[in-house]
Length: 347
Image 1 (cartoon, rainbow, N blue to C red):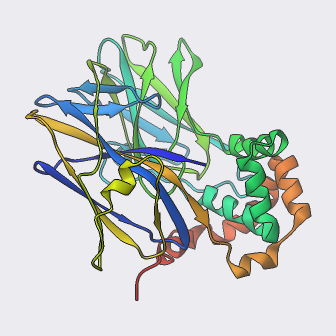
Image 2: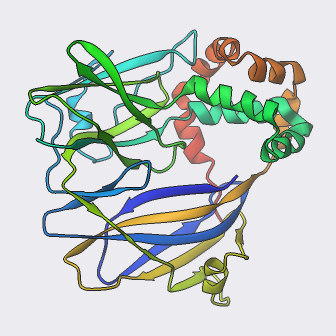
């Protein structure tokens, strides 16, 4: 399926350079890689909602108190600085939930939203690869059925994804927790910064609750921001696309032609350059990529081929989350180092 992701970046001069690298044993098929450029005024930041509405603001208000099951975690959430609030999975149920409570003593007035900077842990990656191992030699067939939109297959995979869930945002209204929306970056690589608009918040102290699966989300930053000015970004395609490390033709036409794709293999690196238009005070840059990837099935995965376990995962995912918890807890402490250590590199 197509991947359509937004990422925030900082402008540097009138030209922006992005390096695109295939660091996994995968085939990447890139349809497009454009910038959304949102002009901002002095002192402003621009954030994007899950519905792709862009809002400019001049204030970001951190929580006065941040409390999870482990206690106070205000230091980890106060700024977007790479210091993430991290929890570990439940030892008996990988779908067990936890709450993170936030209090804002001096919230901004008027319409506002919650900014969350987050990425997933490797829990979802573990479950994805375990499912591929259960599929074994029939993985291609199963994924083809999913791509074709077969109702039963899609419903089963959606049930697994729904069991893990996203980050639910709830607002305290007179002692009752009222849902305000949900969000969550679907992968462990890039930290996604998303703005969750809140329909209404109390005029006094605001209490919010983030409800999520234990050990699934790494949260770097949260803040309340006033929704001051909606912005319409300009879409800018790359002005230059070249493969690095070896001479080659200009590939820009491939990425701006909707009928063509740029296919990359492990170790391939490309440099994409973009020209910033106009004379705005500043810009907020969002990289919008569209495409898909082909997963390479490893020989060792075939040893775990298990149609019965796959059937249990698809038909009774809650039971599988409990059954896999002990195995995941054994590898959880070393998964991060193992994952990043497996990045593909040229000799």
